Amino acid sequence: MKFIIEREQFLKPIQLVIGAIERRHNLPILANMLLKVSQNALTLIGTDMEVELVGQVSLTQTAVDGSTTVPAKKLLDIVRSLPDRSQITAEQKNNQIILSCGRSRFALATLPVVDYPHFDHWVADVEFGIAASQVRCLVNATQFAMANQDVRYYLNGLLFETKDNGLRVVATDGHRLATCAVALDGNMPEHRFILPRKGVLELMRLLEDSDELIQFALNRDTLSVKTASMMLTCKLIDGSFPD
Image 1 (tube, rainbow, N blue to C red):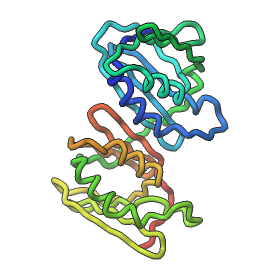
Image 2: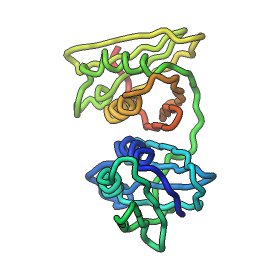
Image 3: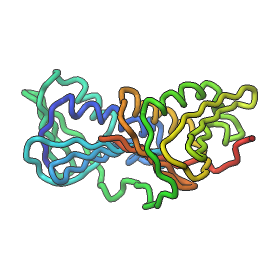
Image 4: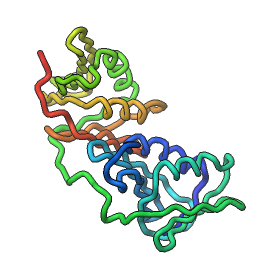
């Protein structure tokens, strides 16, 4: 695997994808980020096995296909330390990836891609599009009432409800309750799901500067949110939210 990329192009998806990677972990592979080059595009994947973030960047220069996993925090620190508008060359050699930029050279140990966990293939029951600004409005109006580390695990997240032509979000910690709703185009099947706290936080990071139309896809266990260049996949909380 080999690719050449501008620092800013590389840094932004690393900063987003690393949000899924826990600093405290029992499996060494979970401290790593997966890098994959295929058809002149670079894909970056991070996961803690509950939340997965995937970013993709088009490569303007000819690249060599391949994949590996690298320590995410070290990769972020290196790329962030390099000069603005600099060009980075990344090349996989044996059990290392070599990052070169000007006179600087860094070597990171890699772990096999085959050991990297992935979400199993799943089929969506409900799909819909919504403006990123609407999602931010819904979450900003409700997340303050979301519980944190409550023994009633189903309160440690936001309830999303689709019905008729609307989407409603509800949060409660047992003492206070917040709700907010927006209209959607077309009639929606009735569906309820609880997005856990980490999924909520990563969703807001993903949509922070976005005004685009995003795509939601979900079934009873899993949610994915897709933008033009990123995708968040998250396991949902299996529980009954109080009425």
